Image (cartoon, rainbow, N blue to C red):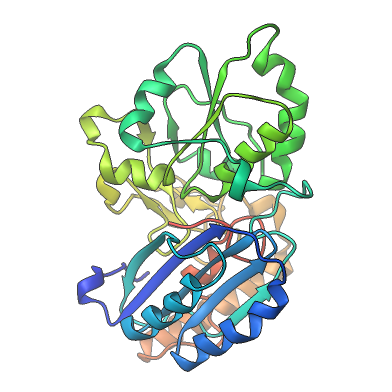
Length: 332
């Protein structure tokens, strides 16, 4: 698995981005955005919806700059935050700009994270908030992500998908919030997109004091010293690094390319782990026929690597690690 390069030394720049904004006619934005990507030789996937834009793209620095210039000219996107990383080779086969109902799928109708998300809390102030006994802390990520690491004292909803979060909250609301004065609710996710939407959901449900970690776990790990940190474990990310730790140092987990879940060194010792084919978490979820197809894919990828070429049908790690949809939902 290729390790990302420092941006300054990388021939390919990877840009992960999202922005909740109001696009009255996202279909009208699609063609010009796709043309800008193709003109700059930029590949990857961008999602457009009435609620904004989300995606990950890669290309030369000049190509990425040109596409980001186009995106920043879209309504309410002038100050869109972009997370950059470097790659030695192009990680995507195609350029896709897709129209969606939501840029991160929650299935709750007309939420408005652009104007009604919770209160942002910067990483340097996060510890004080979550250490407050009048605050409950909720992890909005999927169960396999939480298993790798979480904030001290956080509640794990044990949801397999972000779509499951609203049902979990409604079922647990009375237990979580109790009667009388409601506690403060602090929520977090990997890069920010899911907790912006989940805080908007809680506010729509009538919860008043809702906060979320500005920049997500990644910004916290990047800026808060380890000796002051309340983060425990590693953070699952949506690229070829798989997990990162404090200072965004490369983590210790690998990736199961069958189910896209992280695998630990202990998992790799299991009889149900086979590189590119299965892991203990997905062994019972796949058929023998599926595993044989994965084995053939793995053989083709290994052959391509041995011959010093990229197998044209290979699915790269950056294409496999996506949350909930077969589209990008969150970003490292």
